[in-house]
Length: 290
Figure (spheres, rainbow, N blue to C red):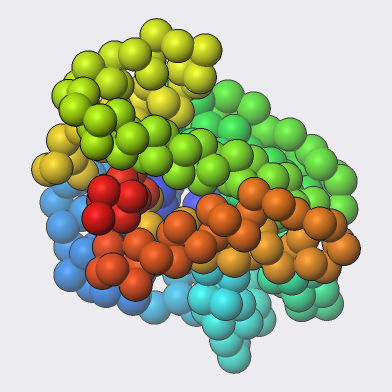
């Protein structure tokens, strides 16, 4: 059996661990916080599932290492810490599924290959719900043989693993996708602010959005997040701002005259300034309603 180490016990990392454990895959989940790991141990309660706060020990037995962390800086900090890569099996493949930006996979690819290991840059499009329904889209890039080897494992919770070429291309595509997602979220928030400001009940307004030509899958599954003040957080506003900053930086790097990006970036920056950092991205609506 392939031993899998998941680095990061956040929402996405835990959701992927849950699917792999349910399929009988031996999984170790690493996290800095032992408290969070203890809660997951009780929830999963499976012989194929273990947890660890000792990364060098956990990584030494892993065939595939999956990182799901908050930023590229954090991924680099953890994976490139002294002794981490040296503790890996010679045959190990390291797969970064975080939204890390385009610089991190280039840095990681060099460090990991220099260590005699293989690296796959594999950000994703989806959420905990799409992981549970095995509908995640994986945008992989890196060495073709490494992508081919990890694809059967990734397909246990995904609908497609796309090979986009050289390491870093996955991050480029992920940022291109997220530009549309975050812009659409901002457009829905602004639309609802106009509708409710004009006297229409938010439920009625959302009914119309869902029946209109803009009723993308995102619009449909974010209904509760926009309407219910107590809806759980799927993606934090400060995380969206991090993505928008990466998108703006990529545009500058490519010399592209981006028009919508600065406006959307500013909307999320205002939300953060208003103290909405930890709220779900749908709560950007509150910024437009102030």
